[in-house]
Image (tube, rainbow, N blue to C red; front, side, top):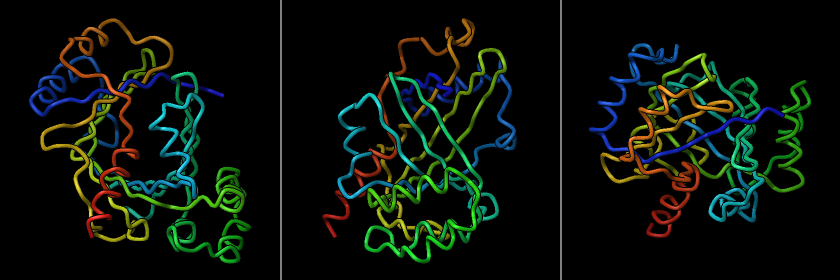
Amino acid sequence: MYYRVEDKYLIYEDEIAYLKMCLSQIMDRDENGRDGPYLIRSVYFDDMADSAYLDNLSGVDLRSKFRIRTYNNDPSFIRLEEKSKRNGFTHKESALIGKETADGLIAGGGTAFDAPKKAELIGRSENFLIKKLYVSMLTNLLHPVTIVEYEREAFVSRVGNVRITFDMNISGCGSAESFFDRTPPLVPVLEKGVHVLEVKYDEMLPGHIKKLIDTGSFRKSAFSKYTMARQITDQTGDML
């Protein structure tokens, strides 16, 4: 299984502008964001014991979580992903799914599990990842719990297979069934002006890129968008 390094930093708005200017001189823009930021929306799955959430909080070494993801609210391009972490390295499996399948997997949120309907949808698929998620739904009662949305700008480099992303205006929603709604009830996850920088690479970060990142001004963090969204949405849900 192929794992990558993934370093995360909390970064402020004024720092983003300077770093993007520098990176644009030595890296290419991600092909999805050549015209500027693009919108990412994901719905994350967890079991009845909140294992993915609690494993993240505890820093468990070997952990994984499932999510369904769209880009720019385009229902014609949907990904199912399983993201795993081991010894500080990350691995991601991904599969394209149709909206009907995504709707079926999300239906009911955390309150219901329509096994016959989901079994019918899964039975028509030959994809291993979809079947793996379905098995987890049956055995661990995995279910969609939280939406995470943010704007992303990304830079890439073939040297070291580096990908640097700026994830801005991160927000969350505890109503998983509103995933395909135009305007789900989102709430901000971080204080205004604070965003997330992610640096992903294979084994070693090239020196000229490392020099830009290791300025000492960025605060390295074990930040998890899902965990932070859960904390915020659980709090706001308690207040309703």
